[in-house]
Length: 267
Length: 350
Image (tube, rainbow over all chains, first blue to last red; front, side, top):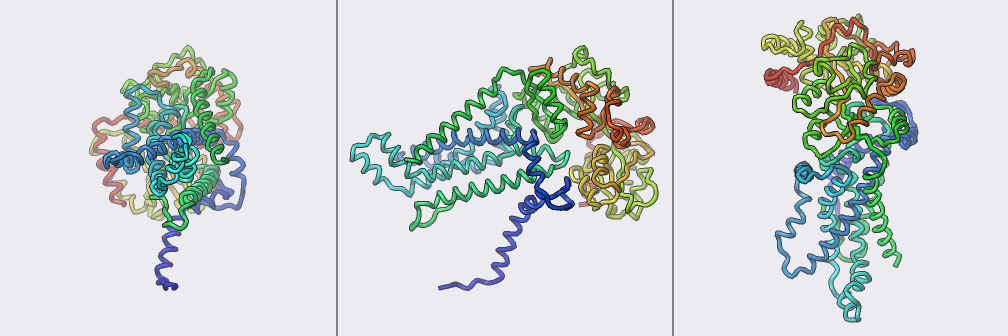
């Protein structure tokens, strides 16, 4: 039976959507603006998308961001998945341990950044790409853990037990049964970690060194000279890629859950 | 099994990237770690330097002087060349964060105009060499502002109600008030400061916004008609909106600079000095400043600059205008007084 909704409610919903997406839409529109200035519209152009790839500073920053995101994603995904598997088999799940795994999600970025900076300078670890990678791994693990663990909890042990009954070694069981079963969760976690790493400004800002100006740090630095329209173009591309990745993560997370209640990402 | 292959290749790709990062870190080429404002150099000039000395330049960016200071004090990051502004040079010298420059390695230092040698914040250029400079003046739109603008007091004219833009900067705004009343922009006399602040409060009803980052946009889009603007920004605004005129008021105004300096403990001090010397080469510096549109302190570079650049009054100040400028000095404990008045000014508005 179709339920009648109050028309005011849907208007409200549209307004909320507009509130959220209008700023994004502005960047999208102004990335096609012919003028160097964000405030005046002078006609439609694709030229910023062309010159974007000629701009060495932007390209260097983008390369740094991508290298850091890829590396930290791989490390965090492996570690987070292993953690989720290990804690699944723990006889008595200690609330403290679980709580500590969630902690990096709730700790303010500025505190994470500052404490990591203190740690690195305490050990005279030179600031650079590696310090950012380590920092990103630190907070990404939690997200990967949350996603993979929710996948595991919906899985049950029957298949693995059957495999072991039929003579599979622990490694074979893991490789041919467990991993394929949790794979969508692992991939979703990896995509999440990747987007978080690309987005992160605050923590990267604290632990960045001479060779590791990431895209967010570079864009922030541009405020004095004025944001160039090339950045609008780049942001547009990044928004589209990020939204695409998040959608894929959601889809993977829900795949195989058909029939059961659909579990969405917890944030 | 497709998925497994995919997984294996992902891991492999990740591992390869990881090694790439590591090896890039310890490549044989010497690297110069440059820490500066974003887009502060012509990228081609940096490329020329890399080619000439067969080195790599890592160009990292900061957004303001305080970020730079924080980064240096945190330690751990090895920068070779940094670009602090004038007052930050003074602070860094005081905190022993800078390496003395070896002028024998920077013979091109002599090319710099005498206006920009031995400045008050670093008297014998022991630690710093000027990179670019500018002054605070009044930019206005001739379409709306009739008659000639010559003085800070013109901002107070009633017809500019809600059309005046001021920099969102304590020392700039209060310094402007001090200058208008004929005092030093770094006055430590509380009566002088009070008189100037009372004056500025009279201006508040006319003020459209306190803004540093977007003041350019607001003038180009003609939201504001008249405002206090740095000369380099004025040149940029005028290039986008031909109705914009610029003047250094007759009472005089504040001059400021960005500089080259080498932080204490820099790994490649020699290369850093080579870089500074390279940038001060007349032809190189002409190419660089033409591209970024800032004012070039290099006297020997004049013949290499385009006629348009030389004719631009916002980039090249006359001797008369220079004579009217004053550097901001450390005001010591009086800073608290400035802080208090600044809060009053800002809260009177918001």
